[in-house]
Length: 387
Image (cartoon, rainbow, N blue to C red; front, side, top):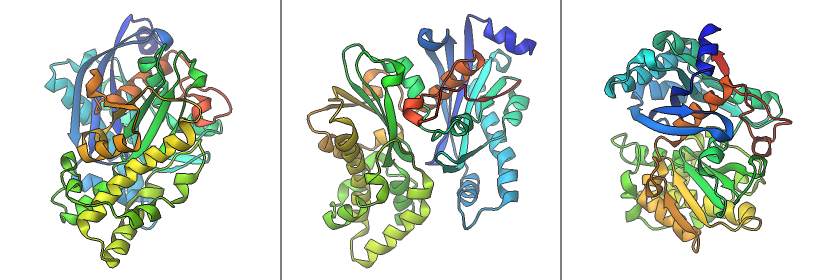
């Protein structure tokens, strides 16, 4: 415990944030210098690295996440294997940016979601003890479970850090993340933390990436710059049917994931619309618009009637898909839509930074969920600590 007390008393801490999302394209590691905590938090980014997900590991995670293919021994072994890879990512980032590993004070790890049942149960793997053992740093993770235990959805968790970093006195801001799943955080101008709200808008890159992988027979796993979708036409009939998905009309608070928009869903729609003679490139263009349409529809239903937006900031891997970004701007015509890079931040590093911030809050015993967002019964301190 001496190590933990020493860390709490430091004026500035070197903290690594780890994020492996539902898109399974890689592991993000950011190293930040954090001063203070709560509303006094100051953050300076020192280093960022994305470690590409090994294809064998990616396939194991997909199997472990599948009701049909998963097994207890697979998940058990994978928990340690993912932990090793997360630890390797931290070590490699420190080496690449000449940061002595023994100077790293703290690691906050999201882990890899295997399955998520809102307000019931959630499972993220990537053994924290492995990360702490390999790096020597205090490691905090398994954040979501405490919120679920308190009756919450266990998601989204990033809004806490977004409030600390992006809040404004004179602008209504929405932060739209597009990872495997799309999610939005709304920060009304001059608000308190219990006035922000957030929810998953629906599919992000998950369906797009699956279709690209299938169309290219595995040669590509994502649509770089949206160049493939750009060549297709939107099939209005297909888009209309996709928008009938029950999740789209479900009222927030709500969260989703691979269980709704994963391989099973993507495989089914590819087969169905090929059978209806929709061309492959048009299928890709339409599922890309589906992500944009689900975002726009969410805003029009649940956000804009209460909070007229001044600015939408798009982050996550989807922000690099120029075709998707064009479609989003079309859906949100009249609202300024920019990317994280446009305002001097990194789309790639944003979620990893969030878990560095959450870990920093945990060591101070600060509540770091937002009940108004997750619908937990009360504020809780999330995160398990391995010293």
